[in-house]
Length: 142
Image (cartoon, rainbow, N blue to C red; front, side, top):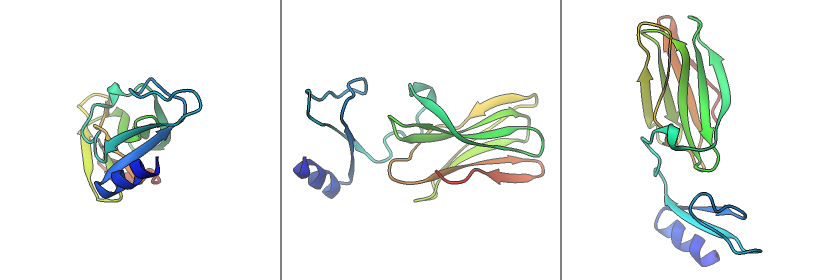
């Protein structure tokens, strides 16, 4: 395993260690550790509906009554933003702190829920930004 981690580090690949999972496309024999190699950024721009374990990490209200959420998949190590009861010109964005990459989504004229696409969050922090007509609010980084 040390060799795999060293090689992965040299080529810029994240190594995810999982001791007891086979549902993510890799399996370990009893008493062994499975290693999955994925390039950082693998889920950038991915629809978060593909993740089987979404959870809300934090939420913040906007002055107009909408709520923004920082959503996360622990198995995929990907984060995205969601806005609930937003109305134009409300928008939500996910911001990765390590490189400043952002993805945004807007809402329509009537109260709607929308979400951004995902960003890879393995080993880094991201935050969600929500904006309405009075300004912007952000969740703490996770």
